[in-house]
Image (cartoon, rainbow, N blue to C red; front, side, top):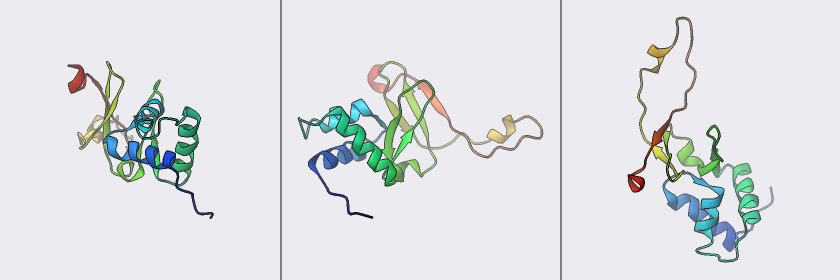
Length: 126
């Protein structure tokens, strides 16, 4: 595999994702990255994100009827859930799990995995 060239755009995008502490949309990544590289373009963000996904450094967080958000794969690999603010549309990580989900299943069903997204207002929007 060819060695990846580090660029200031790549560094700015990686920094935006790793320091956010929550999954970011492409637009949020662009906004944060442009604070370090004012000339960065949306096309560059998409290209770099696609490359980081291919290399396993970032993982997409997919929600129904929402644009994908991106978080470091090391965060995505830990079992956690998300909170979506219905006012500002930001997505936040939620540690922990409610547990006892198997008790909600109909007889004969087997739970193999689950995803949980809480929705409401974040602290900044309340």
